[in-house]
Image (cartoon, rainbow, N blue to C red; front, side):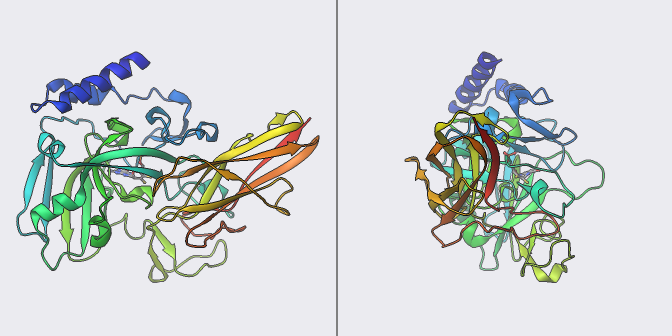
Length: 387
Ligand code: MTE
């Protein structure tokens, strides 16, 4: 399986490197991301109707998440056909010179890489109380990868943005089941023009797999995963935020925290954009039995557009907190690995982790409840037995 994957990745890479795109590329794309659910690659299947795969927390031990272990979030069916040779990206709307790019043309633009922690806004939804409807993600709808591709800014500047242009809309090639609204969203022009916002074609050095948006996806670093449209086929500059289901009522957050369980009026909400400060314990695992003595409590922490400045660990259910050591690997939008060296005596323990970021945000003991269950970020907690 692995060698088949590697062969296909190499085949895709080789085809991309050449100026003419081989039909092999489209065949490879349809093959190389096949996930034989349930649970291939050890991922947790949260939905198989539209593929939603969660990464088990024990995989969060590397700064970059290997692509086969990277969570997948689809609102609808993946495109049934993706052909690199016929794929086109159109750029239009409030621009002087609308144009269309082939994949070969896109690949010729200057490449930029961004290591980004991509998290689904609904990550941790199952932990909100009272519970809310939606995919019941645990802790693993998040991962970190090096995304590479052209800067969205370069493509927009080539088209020439008219003064009326204020937002940039992305449309993917999802197969839309029946009469449901298409997955179309927009980002403000300022974020679209950021030097780190990409039209990504590669993830961890290999062409995107189908699950992650082959042949090209938007990459809006530091923002909720929903901003990063997969299977990108249309970019449109708009004079206002896109109006559609996935901008409203979808992906909105209350302006003021309300009482858990209470409804929130649409006019009292705003779009969810940047990620919150958050940490996850990747070991010991919840329910583990470990020997007394030195125990490395470890995990990862991220903060969207901000930097993680501190991670603290409590081994007594949140009464006392101890500083963890942050890992050396770092990048502007990427998580930090951390570890806390604990001298454990026999007993039952509740271990918590909480992060603080460069904006002065610390994970709150009670997360802000909201009807869609977005941005859960209470301190992570595991219960373990030390023998
Ligand atoms: N893009 C399209 N076209 N269709 C989708 O359903 N899901 C979004 C985003 N881009 C989605 C999409 C959501 S909600 C998330 S969290 C990320 O993709 C997940 O990216 P991944 O599947 O590569 O991890």
